[in-house]
Length: 91
Image (cartoon, rainbow, N blue to C red; front, side):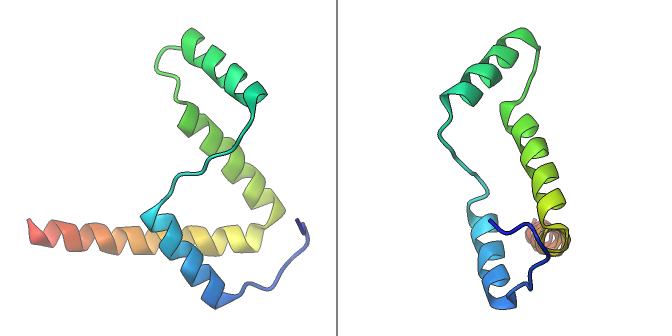
């Protein structure tokens, strides 16, 4: 994976945003990570594996591809905000 600055393809970013809104979950195979996360879930009350992993992954993504991260974050925030507004109007 390239770590340098990359030119963002707007069409592909738009498709990725649509996919992210429809299915925001990620999955990966790691018995070691699973073991450690399940240990902490047993030790720390209300420990959220998803929340913890999303913090780690997002921090690394923002470090590796800061321009792409900022664009994706801004676009998702705007999309989700407008989606919430439309939903509240229906009530």
